[in-house]
Image (tube, rainbow over the protein chains, first blue to last red):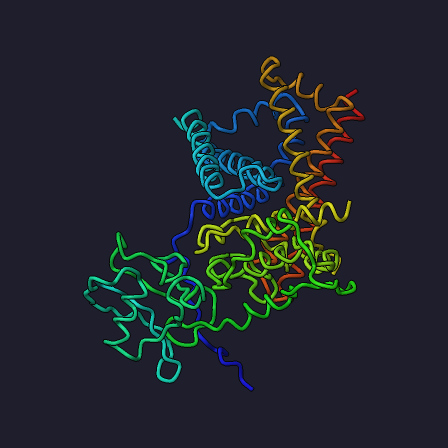
Length: 128
Length: 231
Length: 114
């Protein structure tokens, strides 16, 4: 017997779904995690370079002198900040701190805003 | 009032489409379901489920302006127009706003939604103290409307393997019941990367529950119970 | 499949997160309270016994934490076994290689740094 819904359409157009703030914080957590993972080889490389010699250490410090590298760094700063704050939010929720809806909404906003402010500060410092 | 509704007739349509209706609510129309009933008299091909019309049966769950809810509990007052109605996200559409709930109920049955107690039957009843009964509050009220599971991204990606917020809330309802003796088996069944641990605590479930329940809280308690169980 | 454990992966994700948090806080405190970092002071710090150990622990936690995260993303979005398993294997190999690379870096500087 053919299932009634074989070949049936599904409504799952994400642009037509109104996501709560917690979902925005959550997808940001995932996205920032991917960005950090992608940059992990560079971090390992930077560790190696920083220990090799004085000039290579200095070169790393001057990484932000090129605007496109500075921009990438700003994005990574956002990713690190958002991932860290969202992670702390989850760790606390796991043990029942702030896991009620009203508090979870507030903390989701706080995570997004705080990470944004930190990224903005990095941008002002390195890009201006 | 303008209402835009997702239409799909499996006998004639290959693809779903949106159809706009203009309807004037009358004095007695308070909830979205009242308007839907009025539309049904205008166009009897329009299909949706409804029964109790007061948030008890859980049949008229749908996606209302981008969020899941019950049409019978959604007040017309202050609704953004056009009101856009679509079937529950991620569920196979049978016709218009009617979705196939087979998989949803299969997950519900998988958590054994009944008391398990093989101890000798007491003479009268299995007594529960008021404090023990209190633990079931916020769990037993679930009407299985599927608003939560159909708003959960983890359920969208793995609807066949992740039990989903509704099933997990029900699972915790029996885990918390002092009269149930199968807690260890229930927890062992849930300790699975798909069944329980697809949950990423997005909390979309709790956001849309029309009964004000918190499946995310139940999941949090199940995970802690599993940690206690294994330590 | 042992690769797809339930609770153990969830706990490991939390434990590695805590390790990373503590080490990051330690690193931030060192940077903020000490004088501004020069090559000499950084080299001395990183090649001291506990500095080197903490850096290796940091990267171990980072790789494990990243593995669980990437694995969850693959489990969510990629369902075809022909795509999923090679992808997971590739990620595991890359993360392991990164960790080995860090260990080699630290070993080289630790031996010569003294």
